[in-house]
Length: 616
Image 1 (tube, rainbow, N blue to C red):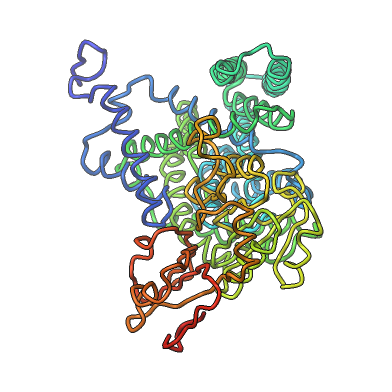
Image 2 (image 1 turned 135 degrees about the horizontal axis):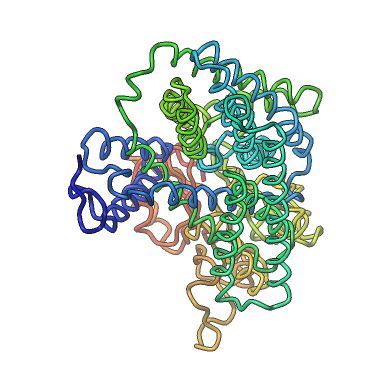
């Protein structure tokens, strides 16, 4: 029997503060390392959790957090689903709307049925345990889908289908498990059918009412200025926890439905502060997803996994290769969604933290009712999550590329503003085989770009039309180059979170010398190439300056090029793999062989003895 310390936890337990710090460090560290190594973060989080938990025995969530563990995971999952609901704006659905509806209204019940059959016939669970766990398996895990979509850079419609299905079906899966459990409860206890139906309908109704009321009330309060800016996020968090707690007290797991509905309502309320709220929630969700995965992996019981046999592997294969594809393909039959997109969605069904957390809860409840096979639900859930996360984490991007459903293999450049000098720059990028898109609200400003065969968009890059029509996932760099300095600053500031602050640039502003005209570092983008304003760059082009692409080799080095062209301006470096980086200084070329540079050079410069490898 474990000896308890003064805190009520076992004497050998890790201090809760240290445990929180360890989980946070490992979670965020795994995310950062995955970014550096260009691999799925969830795989590293699972490995980190298993290493510090069952392998090394340093950290045991149940021991070190005690009774706080389940509430921590429950609240974290609620916040994750709420953030997912915040991303579901109906205006962004467009042609994916029919597919999403089918995946929810046809896919959810069909997935429940196919998962139940797989659990009963492949995993050997009783019908009661299989029906409850099958309901939970409807979920595909927004905690997993979101990171995978960021890495894979999918085209807009298949990404929308996967994202919406994951977020909407998560609470539906939890409620399906509740429904199945209530039926089992009626059949095995003194609970009557009427009592079970009333409890279920009451829980769903309360969750819906609380979710809608919370979302509408919060949106109205924000729009009417009843909440100051600095209190909006705290008020949002407090209301979120209240809605979740109230709904969950009426019916277990209905709180997940309530917070998802609340998020969807807020997302479609046209709040002026919506983007700020969503971005803050995204940051919080990255931390929570990391923490929950570490907790669940560290709490894995190898003894329970040892109870599984080869039938468990057969069950996972049946789910991944039969149940999931059958569910999706039948649901999208006749929907108008192209077959390649249907195939991608059908073979992409990773499960996440919601599945493991809810499965563990209902596994314990079924055990209490006397279903001994329910002890296998937790291990089966963890194996399913682990296998699908690893498989889809490493195969989604190449599979999508094979189907032609990703952005361009070479990340491109978006140029804001049509003018003679931006057209010349775009032509140089096109010559270097870098995808380029030029946008301008004035249709006439794009005439020369269209004549040169450059992709264009006539409209405001910040408009909803641009968000819906443009596949910005194909572009990694943005250059704001209009003759309006204020607009350039607005565009780079607004799109910096999407492209990354290191990847948004703007040309030199007209007035930057005096303190009155200098902007804080939080506004605008990085400096672009030549230290020239829009008028200055236009003047250079009129005077005969040109953008040129030059290949550097071991025989023709950057030093050789610079010696011949001391007055030329560096604009970009293109690596051997085709990745473009905008640069301004000689040191940024790095001197690596087989690198191309884009430069702006004065007229009358003769290439002289430049080798044939030069593309200038």
